[in-house]
Length: 314
Ligand code: NAP
Image 1 (cartoon, rainbow, N blue to C red):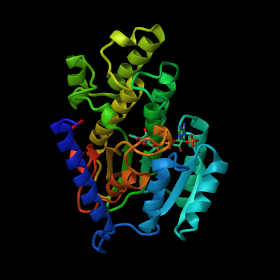
Image 2 (cartoon, helix red, strand yellow):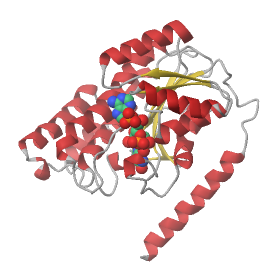
Image 3 (tube, rainbow, N blue to C red):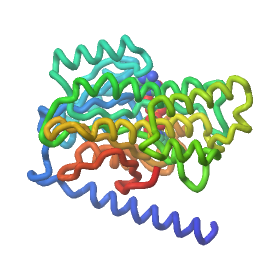
């Protein structure tokens, strides 16, 4: 291994050790803005990182609603968690199905009146190599970007007003960084437009992903200047990141007491079904930054991108 790679590995391992330590420090009464009345919804919570985020949030004393597109699988997952004695509920939710989302919102209103935290975890990747899962590109973009956007739009109206503010956490990926050294969109003008909050719009993000999908259909995507590895997945997460910043900007003028904070994070390379269990960290560690962002106290952080509890550049 080269000296630089070795140093990066050491730095990462040190940071993961620091996080293991941070996770053992309990939240003080002063930091705990939440109670068992605080409701957190996690999408795609029947397995992997979502399951673990649900488990950790309930362990901190919130009421957690596990959602799963297959309700029987969701019920089984909930049963496994309930053995720990914490507060869970479960509901069917397919983030690509408008009717499923509407039914979920209605159920939330009836049963809980609203929610405090939304964790957009559900996602897909069909790419175990480094290329572009051409056949599934549309499904990847639809689920990871449009599905997440569907949920944000549907849930904002049912987010409860509170002194601490409601929270949205989007699980994204470093692969979707706009201005990373590697794996970025080649077109500097497009990068600048997507980076500049004065110019950034939902229409621009949608147009960018549509243009990618059109090129996939036309079989011209390879010369389109898109991220070089995991192309469809990277484009989908790039869109999630840009949309996170845009929504943060749109929400930032809400008055105190009605604030909603929205951030995204990269969980790292995780041992879940998505990576064929080939990742280098456990779902437990991967869930940490998501849980930390959902529970942040005394800090009004919004529109930011994190990894291992540290802010990183988009
Ligand atoms: P996973 O084990 O494959 O879990 C994905 C979850 O998303 C499953 O519960 C799946 O449901 C659900 N899902 C997929 N499409 C859905 C839909 N249309 N509606 C509702 N739920 C849907 O993967 P994971 O590793 O835990 O990934 C969780 C999140 O972390 C994803 O957003 C992923 O992109 C992100 N992430 C993962 C890694 C990694 O290394 N694993 C790295 C960076 C980011 P089913 O069980 O029904 O399929």
